[in-house]
Amino acid sequence: MRRVPLYSHSSRTRPTGALPAQAPGRAMPRTGSATSAGGPSRTAGDPPPPTPDAPPGRLARFRASLARQAARLRTLATAALVVAAAALTVRLLAEPPLTQRDIDAAVAHALETHPPAPPAARAWEAIAPSVVRVRALDKDSAANDEAEGNVGSGVVIVDDGTILTNLHVVAGAERIRVEFFDGHVSDARVIALEPAQDLAVLRAKSIPDDLKPATMASTRNLAVGAQVIAVGFPFGIGPTVTSGVVSGLRREFRSPEGKRMLTDLIQFDAAANPGNSGGPLVTVDGEVVGIVTAIMNPTEQRVFVGIGFAVPIETAAMSVGMSPF
Image 1: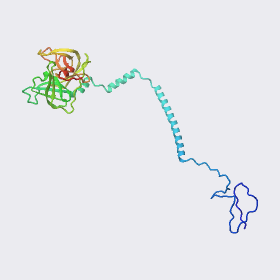
Image 2 (image 1 turned 90 degrees about the horizontal axis):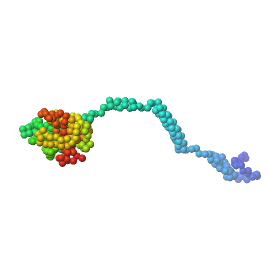
Image 3 (image 1 turned 90 degrees about the vertical axis):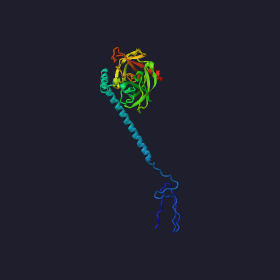
Image 4 (image 1 turned 180 degrees about the vertical axis):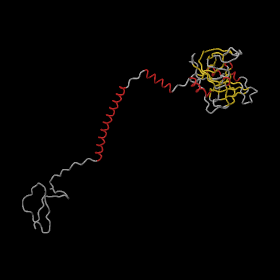
């Protein structure tokens, strides 16, 4: 049976003529054609078939998706800002402007709901930890811890237990005891005296752990009419707070016994009585501007009639070897 020859898909024409003889039992080689496994045959001179474009990879598709999402988010954000600005504009235009009456009402409401503390209360809060009761015991009562003795006041000016008071409070005492704001009681000794200014400096033998010295303020800018507060133990009662104003500056006072003339004093009208001596005269901020030292009363009762005197704090501190400023 005659074999059917195989032909290439090439467009080239084969020269006419008889096929060469085939040896028996031997396959004739196929000329002019080439086949690839599983693909169409082509001749050696044929151009290669066109290669289709490769599909985009996953990374390229992901980047394209991100770019689209970012553009969409920018558009939404811009739209939201426009809407918010429009709403704010409408609200501002719709609300009437604040008037002075509105402002006054708001201030009044704030004062009613959160009233400020009175000046004397603020001063007391600041000075309270520094005020001490001073007891001067004589020979008969020095051995008795419960004895009252002569009672005066003092103010802590250094956190080591250094206390300013009046000389006449501790004069002639056999034993001096001081009581601090928290109830701590200690013996004290005199470490400095200034008789010309009726001043004494004490040092407590033991002190509270959280002892707070007073803050001192210069009297350079102290004006007549300025509010001041006196703190002490009048008649042993206290600590007691009284409020008044500066009645005068650079006053003089002679003691009832006529033994001492005090000069350059602060005159004030905050109530002071026996027992206030040595206590602090303070500003509304609780800063010490003077040491209460005397009251004027032309009668024999020797109680307050509206005129008190204090030694300026500069004089008090410097006269005992301390410079407060």
